[in-house]
Image (cartoon, rainbow, N blue to C red):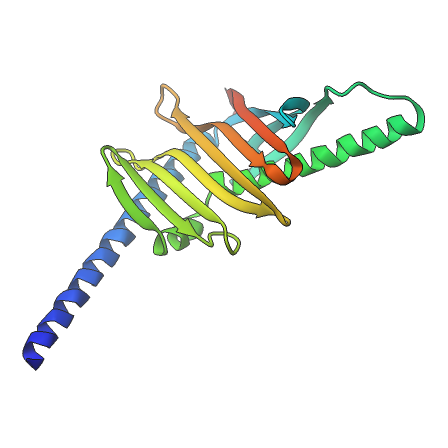
Length: 222
């Protein structure tokens, strides 16, 4: 009886070790593919146009420019912010302008949050996959984990099995105390470089939705 029990324990342990090794290999493969892709993406600068809707109406449009610096860190610079709300005069106009600036700052923080889920370091990916549930469907892997950056957040990655590159990411998180949900979609250039195309953010506490499009990808002049 003891021998049978020991055999079962050994089989369970062996299966666990195999699953751990497979998960680690998957993590390393995805991390390597992502790192190699980002190295190619560093040759580009691009802009992100973000339309901010409140109660279903576009109230603010921001343009942010992205590039990687010499240390390989992603840099974002707000280059334009335009409100569709008609400017009032006097004190009310000043109050309105302050409100627009506050909204623009809130929007930038929300978009910065989405960037954190878009570009993950090798260490962050290793931590993510260490607690992720991974399933397969056709040519796609789906990995989901919670408590990725903050307690209670959740991230799901859809990954192409052949290339180990992202197809889509969805997440739910917090901006301060406000809930935020997001969807990030990816496509490839003709050269095969994977890149983010659209980001949709929903912030119900502010009755706000952001539709962001990455555009004007241009190779940097060496």
